[in-house]
Length: 398
Image (cartoon, rainbow, N blue to C red; front, side, top):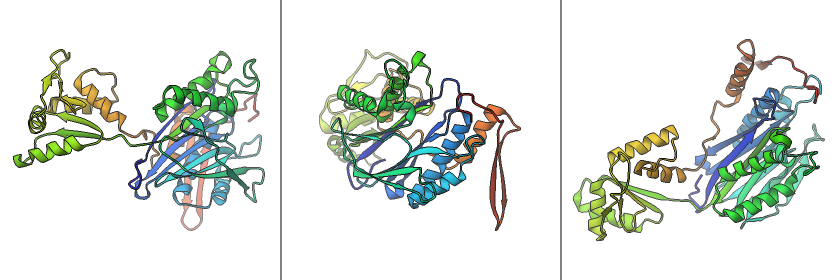
């Protein structure tokens, strides 16, 4: 997400793993962009317990939280609707999911709302940056306190939020009798950023997850573990010049645009490279030592990459479409450059992720007899029924 009003870009990422005995993760993360409002929403929800039931709770929570946040609904009322809509545990007689909602707008204005999840961490200049919050609760659910934070994000800030599987990693072990705790996460992230100042949101999330799992006895997570990150940074720009202009008289204009561009500059195509070389009086040298079945790349002062045209572009497109990585040919280098400038919303929230994903998870886990049934009568209302096998977990009784 890149704001038109400020030079700010939001890199996103998350990583998660399941309880060691489960196949479905009881945590859920979703992102949603609203380009017209220059706005990014992120939700992390943690369903009660673990396994499929927790997964359903978490997915439903992220679905509703994103929708209500996008519509700017009042947070207390929204939380009440979410709690009312969640399925009730037959043993504990409660419906419960914790959540963290991040709403970032325009030039960095950010609001975070938490209910039950560990407090988020904000890093500014590589150091933990405290943000004061305001607590409030629902008149109907007084035992469920929420906290709201508002701050202006700056380039270089990192916002890390996670489920309690992170802070409670290793709980009860000799090394971490009280778990990893927020202080442990904070110190680890600070050290990681210091060693790699440009670490991406995705990689930082993965590092936190791996470290949390490493604290678990025998590397067997006793809970679902999820870490998510937003990295507010200056945008990275790339200019790809390919194909000569239709009007030859504009060669000099294209060369000036290429020369003055602030960012990564790539030329793809022999004729295009010759135009830039001629107009800017910069020699073009072919790299004859390059291996592979594509025409070799060239070198030119002021160009980060110079390649052949159609074959290289087609191959690079294939690499990007198939998610192929680690190719050392010119197309692989081009694809790597392109991907590094693509903001990481690969997990961007899709419009049909809610009930569709719940139905899919139930069917994959338990088979066709189980799933979601929707009955709606105009003017009366809609009933959604979830049918899943009844199971008793000895450790939790739910």
